[in-house]
Image (cartoon, rainbow over the protein chains, first blue to last red):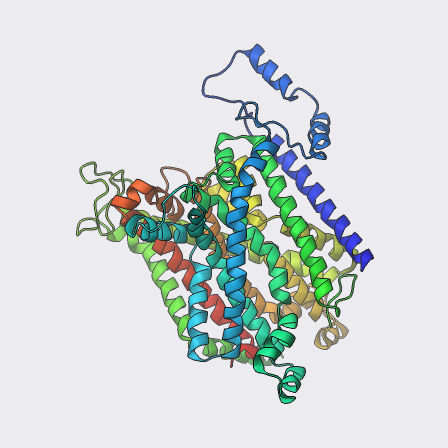
Length: 310
Length: 290
């Protein structure tokens, strides 16, 4: 197993390096400098600013100057927020986004998996059909529509929740809910079809035939086999929650990382855009790595060099 | 020979269509898509107002006989704006599916067919792009390109072939060593003929399903970008910008219809395409028919 882990680790690192290099080069290609304002500054001052941030150096020096500190976790200074480092901004904002994101991931797994199991057991009965219809609505309604709807109904009309801000723990509920609906619906569908596949296997019939309780068969035997697709979905799930947070945080005025990312896009705060992109990508690549390792660990049939199972 | 081949090849297709027509949600989805196309084509002409016509005496007015969907804060007729938004969304969907079809199928087929090191390299590129969430790539591209519908097309085009490439590659890899392909090769069929005439038609099912599911994805991405202000730019509007403008808290309190109509349009469109995509998948995969 160790060679497999090492190989995956190296690939992950290469992917992260490609992302860093590509986004860095793309940002350098950007039309207009990060310090363009409506009022133009005198030439000397502009030259000073450029020198201050090392823009007068050749590209390869700029690249090394960026990547060097990056290895120590330093993403450089923000171009817009004077005296703030990108790393500091991320460390400051990300925890709020993480709480909401984790809450929504937990919600979608804890509700989605049981719902999918329920559907697979009652395949084509009305309970299954209704749930499937609801899930297709769930994967269709965009998170920003859902967030606005929840905000309108629960906060503006009923006044049960605050419409904006994150000052109490319960302020996290509406954003987490709007983030989780897509993945909840998707996990339900995934679990259902995966369970349906496994339930057809001969050994399931054997398990029932030797008199095991249905719940015991489902949880003790089928679950471990059928949960694998859900485990692989964790990567895309996190990616979805992450991108969803960009817009949901904006709607609920939550001062999280997603909200500052969107703002940085408008401020043309290039180091912040670059830093957040690298941070998010690294997070997801790391997660995908863990998921792959977990997959191999959960399914002994898979070959360690990444071949097909069975 | 080709006549007989065609007659035989048609019957599974007819079977799929029959199965699809027996699926009520798929039929409903298809009807909704037809309505949407009609709405996009003729909607703007139906309303007595032009989309750039501003009526300063009637701003943020509730839906009425004069303004079917009400007016926005600039006094524009929301019905026309939503209909124009339908055009944008359909264009985006069309563009993404064309890219997916041309680039994705070509890339995937080449990768799967050549195999070996070429395949390894080509798939490594796809895997790397997959490692980053597509929306992050698209956002970064939009930052560089600037907002505007044309740039949305470019950004979508650069990423929306990945799914298709993966799926087609897998299918081609599986099919290229199939007996009937070997037989055709033995009979002297060239490489191009083998791929176009023998391998690709057999991957048509997954290609169509992927295509129908790419459309709502692209429509969602455009509205998402427009919602956060990176998509189409003023004075053009899309469902995303309209929903975003209407979702401001003060508007939500006083005139919720401003967000209701564009939001409903996006959701129903996505729903319709997902209905059809799902129905197609079930119809093409007999295992799913219970």
